[in-house]
Image (cartoon, rainbow, N blue to C red):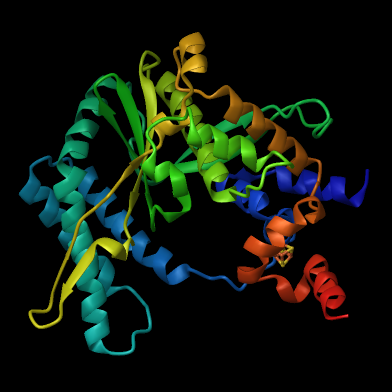
Length: 350
Ligand code: SF4
């Protein structure tokens, strides 16, 4: 077994949807981060920590079981206040700290207003129908098992890919998984389309076409994530005795400042919340017609092929070097230790 194959085996022990997107962005970056465990310099932990506060406050409020607007909002606000008191973050001033707290409170209000009450009622309905099982996280695990095709990792029969949702609720005949994210920006085109057929299918297939001028790792990674989450939800439904339900996946952004308005004189912050249901841009009607399940054969087949390459230890980025050096290297935290990047720099300077 070659060193790359041994690395591939180590990588395959724990595959995540975040890891898959990293692999699509640059296989070498995936190797540094997920196989060798090297820390990159692109640390977004401040934003992630703030999203984590809201995620916990909202989930705890939903767990309280109240579905009226005032009680739900008050429970979430009180929980956020307690979490914020213990929150350790460096601010330039007290004014900035106060401002950041107001932004979080405004986001919380916007969540309750836009979807919180409906989702709380949907959780209550689903709990009544389900045969037990946890419906509220944060970060409930869901996973999908993928079989790489022949020619990928010949030794691996199946690989499990992990993802998370923050809660699950019932909406008519569907079970919906919701995940809080910082922003919807990584979705790109998926935010603005409601169907797979057409420009989404084109962008997805072009990413893998060597003759097409396209590099869409975030879009492809988001569709892979949707495939994994929906498959994981199907599995969860079976365990809950809800196999007749279809499954959907929704992302809600909690750190999107583009919809935030600040009045510095009155010291008030207002914001509104967008959300993205990724189900309809994922499913293709042909596969749905054949299986009556929310699936997409093209995405699922490509997911298995990518997993096969990853688990076989294919980390060389040179076959997509132009795309990777343009789109990924400039913001990469591994430039100082990356031989692919350094050798290109030397050649360029020479
Ligand atoms: S520097 Fe470029 S080639 Fe090297 S790991 Fe980062 S993105 Fe990949």
